[in-house]
Image (cartoon, rainbow, N blue to C red):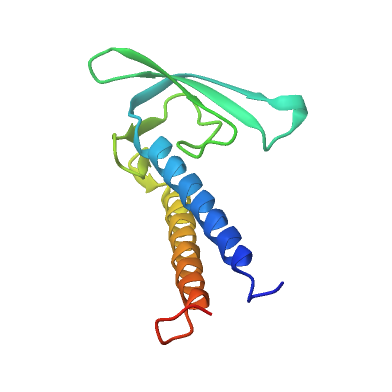
Length: 143
C-alpha cells in the first residue's frame, strides 16, 4: 500500500463513512421501537436448520390488556431470541437497553454499535488529516 497515494486516503475515508453509517443505522433500529408487556406467545423459526439464523415472533400483552406482536429478526439485536412464555419485557423507545424480568440487558450490542460509529469517525478524521497533509508541503504550498 502506497501511503503517498491520495487514493488510499479516499478509500479509508469511504470505508470510515460506511462503517459509521452502519453503526448509526443499527443504533437507530435498536432505539426506535417499543416492546412492553408479558409474552403470551413465542414462536421461533430457524432458516435451514442454522441455529444462528433464527427469528422469534412474540405476542405481548400490555398492562392495559392490549396485544402487540413483535418480531426479533436474525440479524437484529433488539431483543434476545427464544424468550419463554411468561417473560416480562420492558423496552422503551429511544433507549438502547431493555429489561427482561426486571434484569437490565442489551449493553453489548449498544456498545458494539457505538464502537463501530467511533471507529468510522476516527477513520474519516485520520483520512481527512492525512489527505490535507499530503496536499501541502507544510508551508502552505502545493507539492
